[in-house]
Length: 292
Image (cartoon, rainbow, N blue to C red; front, side, top):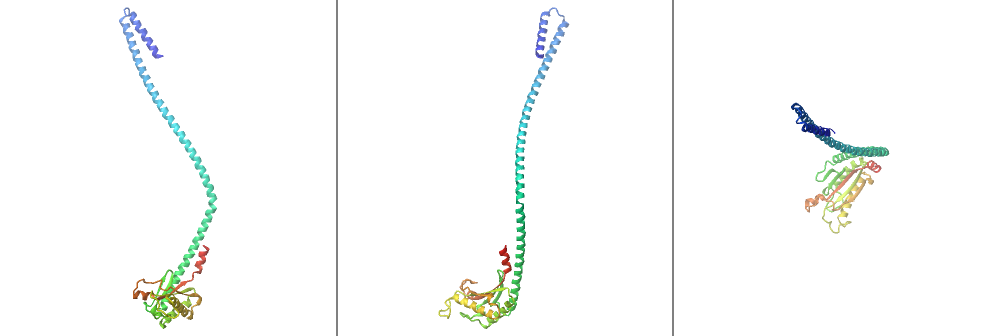
């Protein structure tokens, strides 16, 4: 509306100048021109203000659009958060119910674990006692057999057992099942220790080399017979010396468990032996294992 007003004013002013250019005074003319220039300046200012306002309006509209986008994004994030929160609450509730349901199971597992730990501690105690007993047994056997040559007789611990290994030359002549006097002496000294050790089982294992027995040997067909008969003879000596018969088991291994696989004279001599295996009874240990 202002723009139209200025246009009309200019039009009247110009018209007035044209109609009265001849009659108006110079001062009047100058006043009118000054008003014209002022109006043109006002018009320029207004147009500049209008341009500025339009730019500001455009900027505000752009900012408004950005704010609306941000608002839409916030609404979307809010919806996702609420959905996630609801899901988390639902899962938390379910987890709480599961924990309550499993509490009795956890208590039972803890009780079972405690019981197992107690059984393991008891097992370890028994094993420690067994190791202590085996070492004490080895010491007693070694002391009882001190007078014999190490090449003829050795006492060792293997796999929790005491092994008394007696070479053939201490016990038997070649191919014979009759124990020599020196061997009988060693076996009686061993029996003296075993009579005091009531909780020790005894296994007598006969071993031969890989040379077949001579044909026609009375009562024997092969090295199986030789190894078994030698073990039986040693068992008889131990029991006659006072070791309880139900604690001693004779067995023959023939040539099948050699100490040295070589085919030399020395290897074969080493393989011809009798091993007396002493094993502490483990009834208490087996009872715990069966109840586990």
